Structures are given as structure tokens and as C-alpha cells.
Image 1 (cartoon, helix red, strand yellow):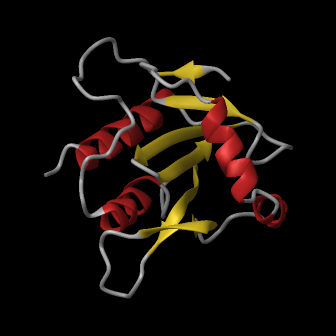
Image 2 (cartoon, rainbow, N blue to C red; image 1 turned 90 degrees about the vertical axis):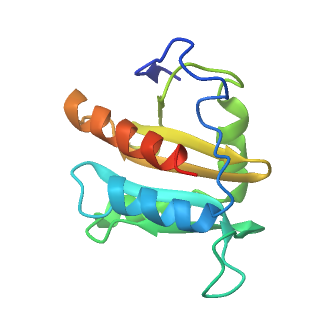
Image 3 (tube, rainbow, N blue to C red; image 1 turned 60 degrees about the horizontal axis):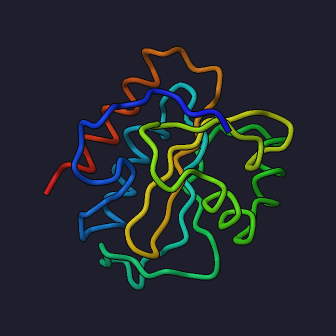
Length: 154
């Protein structure tokens, strides 16, 4: 896997760690700012869900939650259905434990196309922001800025 957009030693905590308690609300904001209606946004996948409609914290599940862009093409939709809990965990295990990279290129989500994944975690809670690999650098930089802004909100 190839990493992109490194940040050298600028943070005290690991790059993809989320310390906010409102995990599900955080994921909603990431979806709105990087996937929904954004060029190159595909899906946000997590191993958590809300226990109730008002739950902002989320609970870890053995099933995945997919926040999918509305106009995803049929081929990608079919492949996404095959990306299950085991493959999700396998992808997380294959990522470097400590990295200065924001995005990683992979074919593990959609075997037919290479995508960029931005992993996020909080204890046992995990999520992947999935974007098209062909996005211009300006769009990727904007996505990183949006994600980092949400991570750093208290």
C-alpha cells in the first residue's frame, strides 16, 4: 500500500486517532464534508452504529455500517457488498501501525479499481473514508483539512 500526503512529526497523538467522544456524530460530519456531494467521495465504512436515534457515541458491531454516496455506480455497489467485516479488519491490520501518511492506496475495498482510504480509529471503533484514487491533489488536501478539522474539535 502506498501512503500519500505525509505530515512529519506535527502531532503529539497518532495521525488517525480520534479522541472525540461523539464518534457517530463525528462520522456524520466526516461523511457530509468528504463524501456526500463531494467530487471523488465514495463511502465511509465503520464497525459501529447508533444504539438509538439520539446516540452520538455509537457501539462496536460485528457488522459494518456504510454511509454511501447516493450516486455510486452499480459496479461499485456490487463490489462494496462483498467488502465484509473480515475484509474490513484485514485491511486495518495491513495498515502501518504508526504512519505519517494520511491516505493509503488499496484495491482491497473494490478489487477492480484502486481507491484511497483514510483510516480512523478510537479504541475498538474503526472507520474508513474511501475516495477515488484519481482525485486532484487540491481535492485531497481539502478532504484532509476537513477530516483534521473534525478530529481536532473538542
